[in-house]
Structure formats: C-alpha cells, structure tokens
Image 1 (cartoon, rainbow over the protein chains, first blue to last red):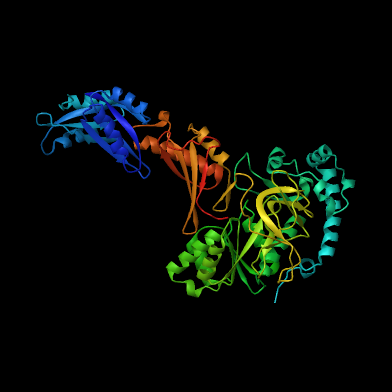
Image 2 (cartoon, chains in turn purple, orange):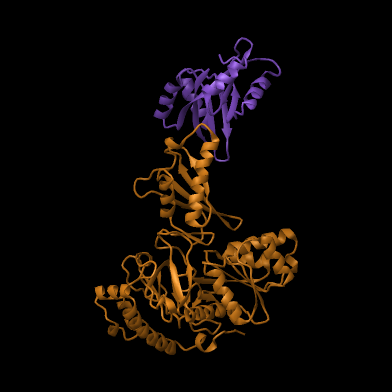
Length: 135
Length: 433
C-alpha cells in the first residue's frame, strides 16, 4: 500500500526530538512507525501517523520544517528470512531503496516494512506479482 | 648589528625622505592626471589640479580611491601605462564583484621585489640563507613577492608554494631552510606537524616572515618557541604591489613602511579627515613610484596606528602597528579576503534564504569558518541524499566564489536570531585585535 509519511528536519541539539514528539502527544496522535537518519549537522525524522497532512499543518504552524512523501508499506510475516524475499525481488528488478524502516506496531503476526523507492506504483506491482502482501 | 638591503634609503634622514617623497608625489600626480582619465575626473570633481600639488604637505587635497573605484574601473580604468609596457598581473582572491586586478611593469616588479628583499634582510637574511617560500604562487602576491625578494638577497630560494605539509617539512629538513615565509597560521601548523613527526630538532630555521592575516603576540611567542625562530610580521596588499609595503625589523615593534615608495596617512574613516601621528584610524596609502597601477590616497580599510619615533634598528621610515580591525565588513579568513555579501550572493543564487550567519573561530591556530543557513521548506526533502546534493551545490558555489571552503551547517527555519536593527551576520570568536 502506498501511504503518506511525514519527514521532519531536526537540528542537531539536545531536546529537538522530544520537542517534536510532544506535539504529537498534545494532539493525541499515535506513532505507528519512526526512523531517524542522522548526519553530522542535522537529523531527519520520518514517521508514519494516521493523518500526516493534519500533523504537517500543526507542525508547520509551530515553525517545524516538514514534508509529506508517499512511501510503500509492505507486510511481511514476523519470521526469519521474510525480508529476504522482498529484497531479492527488488534487487532482481533493479529497484534500489533510498531508505527503509519497520513499523512499531504488530499486525497479527506481521511486521510492516516501510520502503522509499523511486516509483511506488511500479514497485508495488512487482512485489504483488511476487506474492508479497502490500496490504 | 642591523642589516639593510638599501641602507641609504632605509636610513635616510627624515628631511631628505620628505624631499624625495615630495618630488616623487608631484611627478606621480601629474603623470596620473595625464594618463588616467578616471583619476583625472576625480581630481576635477574635487577642483584639484596637478599644479596645486607642490609637495607632501598638499597630499590631503587629493581625492581618495576606494575599493569601489577599483571595481568601477575594472579592469583597465586605472591603468597608467599602455598594456605593451605591462608584464604581469596579480589578483586578490575573491570574486567578479570584488576582484582586484593589479598591473605591473618590469620596473614595478623590480621595486616590489626590492621591498621584499628589504624585509628579508631586516630579519637577518643574506646570500648564505635558504629561504623557503610557502605562500601561494600564482595570482596571489605572497609567493611571487617573497620569491623575488629572496632572489634579490641571493638566498637559495625554495619556491614551495602553499600546501603539501609533508613535502614542506621534508625540504625544510633536508635542505636546511633557515628562513620561512608563510601565513602565521600555516607556520603554527607546520610547527605542530614537525613536532608530531619528531623532526623539530633537525630544523635550522632562524627567522620567519609571516603575513597576510591577523595574528596576536601570543601566537608569535607560540610559533617562536615551537619552531625555534624569530617571527616577523609583514604587510602589503595587491592594490599597492603585495607584501613588503611594510615589514618588521629585529626590534619586532611595528612594521617599517617603505616610505620612499609609499606615503602612509591615517584618516578618520567617517569624516575622512587626516589624523595626527599616533592616532588610530584608517590607513591610506599613496604609491609614489608605481608605474602601471599607481594608487593615490588608496583607502585600505585597515585600522591601525603610525609611529614616527626613531627605531633602534636605525631605519628612519615610520612604523605601522598590526592592523587592529577593518573599517568595512571584510573578513580575513585563513589569509583570504571574504565579504559577507559574497556569501549572501551565493546563497541567494542557490535558492537559499538570506538568513545566514558566519561563525569564525581559531582552533589550534587555524581559522574555522562555518556558514549556518536556514533550510527553506522548498528545499527540504525526506532523503538525506537530496539534502546533501543541495549542500554540495552550495559548498561548491561558495568555494568557487571565495577560494576557500567553509563548513556549511543547515539549521531550522527561524533559528538564526533576528535582530531589531542590522542583522548580525558575523560572529567572530577569534579575538585577534
């Protein structure tokens, strides 16, 4: 499934992440997935929430730099080796992954993997054809 | 025992020196008026004729030249000799908007090299010395100037140019360099590296001629102690020739201005009024002997103090203090001239906002140079790769504009403090003045 992810620019100083997550708490927003990429100077927070556009509006209002990007969410059985099948399929089709992370919530024995690729539609079709659940 | 390269001139009596300056000034003003329409216009606008200038007492009547005149007249507008008589250009680092291109006849180069030779002899240089020049060669005046001076003195000259520290140290050790010419921060770096390599005890250095950037007395002592030499200051600018406009003698108490070639004045940068000897103000130079690119009353923007008290070395030429600051916003970072406006231009060209801050510091005797800029929302992306690509684009543009690379720091929107009045663009923690 193609879902919307919210990315947030975090300055590299103590308290930045906490400040942002507080906004989510104040607005009663549940975090389904989270990843942080760090560079020497800044961090990049990526999250999956129910209504990313609404969170984006609230965060922007408070001066946060953020952007909404469509990403691919893929369900895999929570068992050894299941990620391999996805990666093999993508690699055979010469699709490269910009980044990937896993959801925090358990979905009836499945884990949800978030994938950032160039073309979500094409990738989703390839994965479905290979029998991988894209929810 | 003091050494001189041109003893008659360097120890000439003040009266004779004034006579010489007057004579040269009158001739120079007349020649410039006749051959440089740009300066003739400035004189006409001020209502001054060459015949009004009868000696140095009339110098104050002449109009100033500024960096913006150099820009307006770029490239040939201030040329006082046909190009057929010019043999060289030198240029300041920097950019289209601010670049200075100075022209030299063979005679100009000869006199410039004389000034550098005086500086080398003043620190004890003779034809027995091995002089390692690690200023950049090329458009920058540092390398070519000291190289020429070193030849004139008859030193064995090592034209190393800048960089490649391992090779610098190897030559320094193997060929027994006794005099070294570079920026003070590079000298400090060479000292650290020589200590690390364990070769410091093998070096034969006795004197260093260090210029092109601000340095403190503490730094001087540090370099002297580590490299086991005497560290001397030298001053100059491309507009006037290059290094050697003034230089320190063994007294290490101010830089003697080569007054037979340059008249120094101190003015109030706001009222432009000439200030009495010993006052702190903006340094203004008039080049008396330059043929191709003769600056008359050129405002250097350097703030300093002149001192006409006799010097123990026997030189009669007045001394100037180290520059104590600037009357404009120019920064000198690792020896390179940088204007905040250049950085602003690059950022705007790269689609960045003009919300930036330049943070300078000096760590281990080397300038650190950070540019913090607020990340605009249009450029924000969910991938580090996309942001890095933008960062690299900005860095490349900054490097090509400035000639040196800052460290770029992207910060959150509105995180750079907005001030009520003039934006605080520069935070200089170096405490050099």
